[in-house]
Length: 342
Image (cartoon, rainbow, N blue to C red; front, side, top):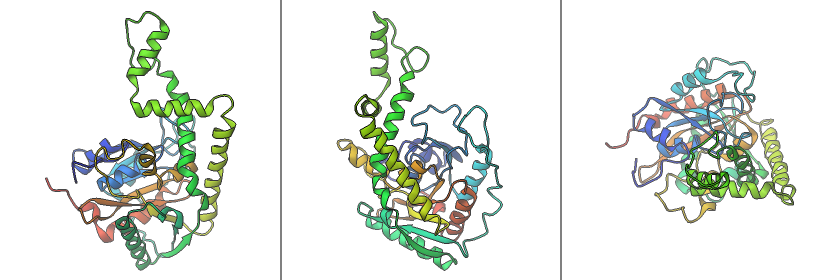
């Protein structure tokens, strides 16, 4: 849509390929929004399934309690078909769920009449671009016209999600990526005088700056004297985020929020401010912390012609309902049918 802007991350390559009609579908791995944010920025559909719904066998482990593989497609129907193909129990993944698989395409056209859609106040708070807010409010009203009931929902601990994530994910990454030392995993620098020299050279050359930053942070929060203050506290905060979702789904069937707080931003503008970059995932991270399914789909365009995405979050293993709700909106508005200028 604009080659001077990012496609999102880390699934930006997959999202851009689908958006540019270079592939009919692609896979992404979503640890803190890496399917849904690129889907929003590129104007496609992306689904982070429930934790355990899809096998992670063959994927490099980053943060094992958060990572999830999911489909990225042009529309909701393709997303349902892709999920049907990749979901299910896999004995090669110890976290793979034994939960039975529904027919994800069967209820796509069932509509939303009678469903309760919650609007989390905190996910529409400071930091959400006015054009994104307007697009989301219009999507909510579209659902009301289709027969759904709208209900404000308070999730007070979602404000802790980004900080919590950037303790837990780096901690798990530090542990997982320790195996990439050039012996069995990762590239290997040869010709060094000692094993230690090979370790240092291999890891220095094999990891980029951002990966190194997260490994160092994760190692620090797990270190003696700090693990209780940081890692332990983050786990308690994660529990509070999960409790917020449990309370919300006692009142509503689905939550509606932005898929990203802004449209795609220009290349390089946030490189000097990692925290600003991390905040771009603020709408996505809570669902990862709780292990819940979340669907991103187009809900409009900015005045500058950039896609805007909305996010639907449901209880565990409610992917069929999310796809049904997403399809009801998509059928009425057709944002997914727009194409970028050649």
